[in-house]
Image 1 (cartoon, one colour):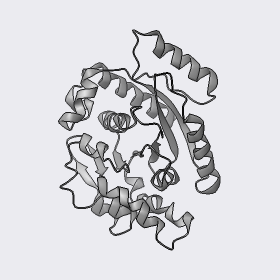
Image 2 (tube, one colour):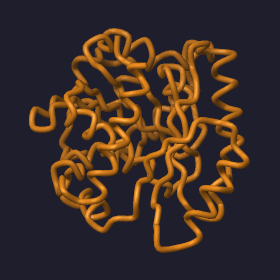
Image 3 (cartoon, rainbow, N blue to C red):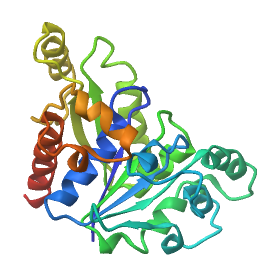
Length: 259
């Protein structure tokens, strides 16, 4: 059965969606079968793979409201050898609609897990892109996941909200998903030319007693350009430093999974 990883950070602008897109594509590039689940109403992971958010028939909105079976929502991307469960702005209404149902909270929090259980064994990895908030959607993602990967931007407020996120992971572990663990932290937007990036890394390492990946994701123009072309960096410019970094992260992640 595949490993499900929720990519989460309640702080926006830290490279969460960039990591969801490009780590998934890098895992596929090294031969892994990957399912990407977009559970962010912005749907940026969906469009980052070149899927038109306005033209898809079913999305995670339909899945969360249990209107369709999971196989009806999956879009297969043969070029990148990975599958996608897409999202668009309709998903923003799912939380409101779920709160209006008579289902118990624990049932609402297990909807995504119950759906993915039908297909999880087809994949090596299920990568779930969470919204930048601690909502019922994020709790669903963590309840469905085995681990949580946290992108951390190399800037002064890197630790902001991190303790709350770790608290939420522990709470979900206690109440809904005993197998949940923290996969680790990965530094994004690293700039080797500045002291700031290195200072932030040292500060986080000294304060957070959690696994931190060795791979650093750099600031990279090609990495920033790729979403506007609807491509992961692995397809847009596989020789760029951004592509090489995400490939190294994929190998580091997969090596740990094999141990």
